[in-house]
Image (cartoon, rainbow, N blue to C red; front, side, top):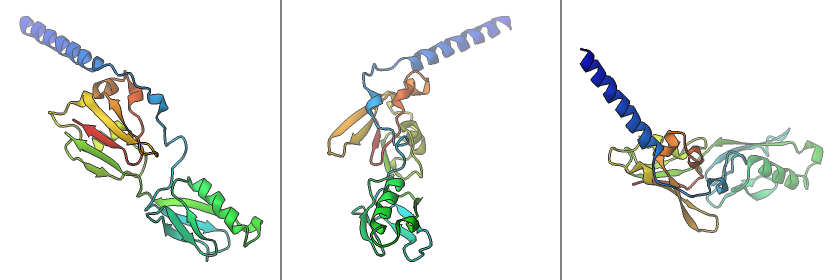
Length: 204
């Protein structure tokens, strides 16, 4: 019995060591993750198909719910068309106030803008995950969140070779490496960046 117990503890210790070595290793990645923007720091950015609730104090005719058109604009009574996509709700509010000041007294132009439906934040997860596809989370998510949202990697996935494909506003595409084992071990948490709308996570 003692021999069996000693053998079991030896096997358990070797297994723990193997797991530690596996998660502690991985490809060496020299990428400056700090240069990637964190959308949570700058507030939510309105995008096409998002639905906004605009309220103008004591003016129900100017208030209402409106959907951002595919061209990124909204149309409001009295002031007409406004570009909304690419702005935070606060910046859009300021633009509405500035336009309304031409028609009503500035002190009565009290405006609030709220995003009531987030439809523009879309993430793609492709490759060896259980449920690849496009996802529309209601809040910002990280790479690890996206993989989990897609059901997790399959048994054949090469999780230490995951990449995030991101396209700059200028159209330039770049690949951001993500080493799964180093992230879940806690050794390279900076790799777990917050995804931007339009990002694609590739699990080979």
